[in-house]
Amino acid sequence: MDIQLIRNATIKITYAGKTILIDPMFSKKGAIESFAGIERNPIVNLTVSIDNILRDLDFVIVTHTHPDHFDALAREKLPKDIKLFCQPSDKEYMQKAKFVNTEVVETRTTFETISLTRTSGKHGSGEVLAQMGNVSGFVLQANNEPTVYIVGDSIWCEEVKTALNTFKPDIIITNSGGAIMPGFENHPILMNEEETILLAKHSDNAKIVAVHLESLDHCRVTRNSLRQLANEQGIDEAQLIIPMDGQLVTL
Image (tube, rainbow, N blue to C red; front, side, top):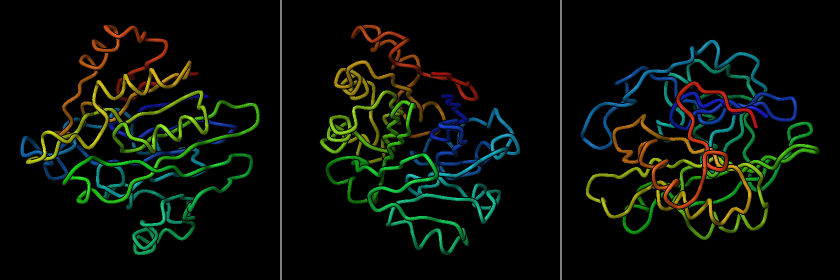
């Protein structure tokens, strides 16, 4: 299978003969308000054209509708009749956005030969958690294909551990930016370096693809800081893959 990091959490996957877009954010650099009071977001431009991102898509998964995962430009550019999967709490949002082929995933559904199972997570801890809303992850499964776990915006928590233990994924995509909201600096809302390494150590021989890095002003983890800690902890580049924006990873 192929995984292409577009930018941030926007990824394009080729899986079981289908092309899947995850969490589309198409905005130009600086088009969205700052999250941390440092600079407007995203802090880098796309390295892949929107036309190329949209080419040959079979369906879209939106883990949640924060603007760094589903922005105004994605709502405008995506065909309104494209097959789109979302979590239950985003049903009304998608209806208002006039996506007419939306399927709300309560627990599990299928798209032709692909099984999609929705998982839970925690978008932070402590007082900030209540402000962040619902988030989901998704597990993709198909015959003769690796099991892929898209963790979504979550810290390392029991819900993520349960998904790992239940599905035993071969490939795990983590949002590892260690994002911090102002006033809640002690409670990251995404996995940081340490939590990503904990996940790696809990995941047997799974390959981990770390994204959601170096694209937003409230994300503190860098590719270099994650790679350095991984090296110190004996997690090599074959197990933990940290792609650059636009990079295609074949697994």
